[in-house]
Image (cartoon, rainbow, N blue to C red; front, side):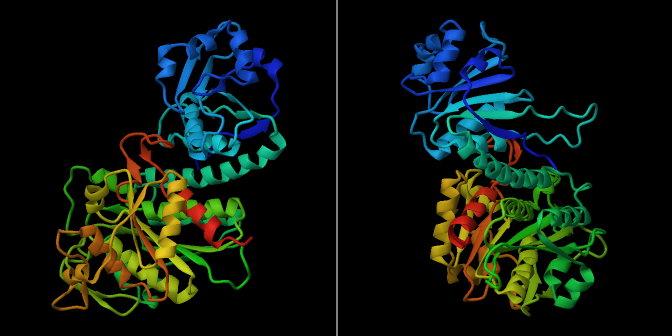
Length: 491
């Protein structure tokens, strides 16, 4: 698994700046004020920092922007990175600045002179999040490990614990990115399950339900999706019991379609290679559970993922087939490319039936309509519970992960009525993301607070984001981790 480079906090040592190697970062306010480290670097470079501060480029720059002085005379470092950051910078702006430093860092060692920065942990987190590159399938020599990161702070002993928290969160995000970036011939349903079982080593309790067990439970919707594939369908249950003994857990449920051809309702060839990311919801659940275990969250959380592959074959589900859900509802499958909701419906019902959770969040790369509605900036949120949904939206905003709530209403359910079964698996073209959420709500009990997150537009993107290179983003791990910490974690 791709892990971020080591990060540690060290005391401020001004004389050592002259012999530092790798890259060195200093913080300068938008007004051009330097701290002690900045002034020392300015003297060592014979006024180069001051000349930058007095330039027109600096006065028109934005908070968080980084200017690089390459191979500065008077120093041994390969570059001095000058970061524009106010002394009272917000946590999110500080994190973004750290991310920009990591993007410039490459494989070099990095020393950041943070001085008395207000949010040193956020600086570390930004660096850890952006210090990522998926190279598992690059040929030739193995890529060199990234250089270590040291953050010099006036109170390093207090800040050091923040580095451990940052690395725990970044490790979960990186796991999600690795899973979403993997090609489908590598990340089969079996391989996915095996990687989750490996997390028993960090304290999770992991159970894999095979097809025979799923059939016994009555998960015929889920099984119908994978029956055309040679890869066996599975449900993996991950439990973290860090809260009060016997307290109802909070449940995270993820769609794990390791590859989606559309089945008999075959997708167009153009762009089908991107369907390796259709397990993005399950990837987010896995990464979140990893983070909770690594930071030893004081909460009871259960993560459940449905792992299937949607393939056309002589044994594949046909449009027009009728299957019975674990709940007992009959479903007319009018489009086999609306498969994710079939997986989630059964896993949602199983989560409630087995764990009686205090609340649930499901995540899925569910509908192309969500990309039409919100693009690649926001996930779509649907909920039956205002307090839970508002808490999540606030958590997402604090973490810089965009999410926007959309409506649920009975009028949208009318499009799912079937002539021959209790419900169809898809409705009319209009409001496709909402009708998909309405289908899922059918499998949520009235007394269970629930959020559905459609992450089709944010799970994997074609250009870099504030915290990730292009490709898998790991969206959702940070927001869910904060939601658990703020709403469900014991004091």
